[in-house]
Length: 442
Image: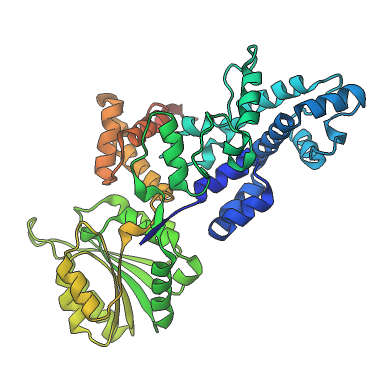
């Protein structure tokens, strides 16, 4: 059972200028840490304040113009504008208040500053999201041409109830319901607006709270608990999604993660310990022959040793291999929780686990949208292997090969983004001794 995430819509809501109490009410429970980071981000907050100014000016265009014409007021002393926001923007180098200005000039100024500075917020969004679709919500193209701003104003005022929380964005308004309800809803709408379709649901689907609570309950009831991973039968990026989306205070109660690995698996397993605070032991299992892996035997022996010698009472077993039922049934006094992948796990083992009241869940249910840091580390590592012979490769084909080497499933668009951001931008460097090297623009 899964639910849609809200990280993306919380970020959009903050940037476009949705009132802070509404942002907190809608998203604080799921996205508290994210919102705290946004509050401290100068570029995000500057765009937020500029968007708020533009929305208020849209809503009170004539009243603002009249206040400046007849009452000799300016934005910093008109009651419906936030003086503190204006003051902060000017401290940050955004010239807001001008003399002899009218509403039209201010609208042009706000739009220009948003257009020029929105790219500073690109880093708030994952590479798997099409930044141009996000950017289009803020940028008004050709805004200096006659009737462009007027057309946006008329469209906004005549369809204001279709705009999210009645805040101005650049789009063709339609009754989609609340487009900022969940990440899935938002992605569906904005990709559809561009004649596109967002396919990878794992990016915005996360395990239900009930699933997470069952995992926490298992950990809390354990005397000593460790995570044991069959790397041959598990996806490192999905497992990292599990670790990333669980409560870190609860995970801190786990003694360690033991990775039982074979040299045929992805290099991602070599990186996972750098992205988790749980101690990691990486056991690389040698083969007697190339045709026979000994990971399952070594892992079975390791679990038995930890149970009998190291007083580990509980194991979170990450594998879809039904052979481990023999291990589970041979340690009746140990506690097990099993994490599997839907496509690799048969119904028979699921039924056996259920009949013996052993809780199981799928690592496919956890969100992978926020696992980019691990994926990038692995991709950069794979790219560096090709750098000595980079001139012998086609850049686009190299991008595909690197994803294959890293065993990361990705759309053509994601690989294209990686190619454009990191392969096309490879730079030649010369150190003080005159030695050449190629640098990845991370």
